[in-house]
Image 1 (tube, helix red, strand yellow):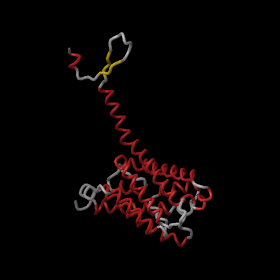
Image 2 (cartoon, rainbow, N blue to C red):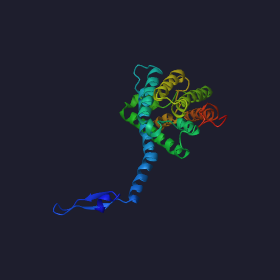
Image 3 (cartoon, rainbow, N blue to C red):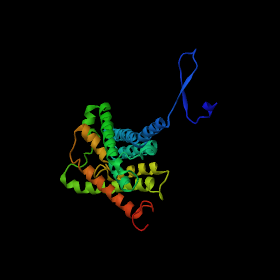
Image 4 (cartoon, rainbow, N blue to C red):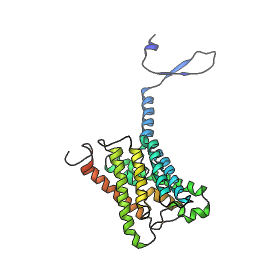
Length: 269
């Protein structure tokens, strides 16, 4: 019968057991609508959610590593916790969103051609939301006295005006190191590596060990914003936007002009 030769898909409509099954066709228009919805979810909504969840997990871990440091290990415990947590969440969510979890990383990746510019603001918004949620969870499970003694994991290393200059320079250089690891290890086609999550996590660990005593080694405005908003600690908060964003811009320019592959580089292709 011609019914079985038709290329139109059919779904059964189950009615009374005593009646024969009837069928209704699924039109190509309906299929197209479904594909569009799935495409929008995968291209826009799912990456946004991945950035929220990944940022929440990373910043929760980072805050707790500062709040719950009973042995006063200095930079060692935060360095290991931040580096390990970042490497893990990149490995988990990297194939969905790219695994940024950091506005400075998103800016550098966007400049390097690895992120559509229309996704930049949503990504940053997702990271800030995740940061606030993660910091809020850290506050919820921490003893109040310990929480307030550590400013809720917020960056409180800079206490005097004469520390501002060194702190900004440290944040610029350390963020340059981090964003260069991301752009060259995970975005640039010529140098991209499967070890990128591991290398990026190690970069954060090295930066915290090297510059933790100077600026706190933030390198991430979302990591600074979340605990600052929850603990209401805004002293010198602007440093952790200016320094990381400057480092991200330098990385983007270097990759676009000189260090990127032929697809990315604008000069001497």
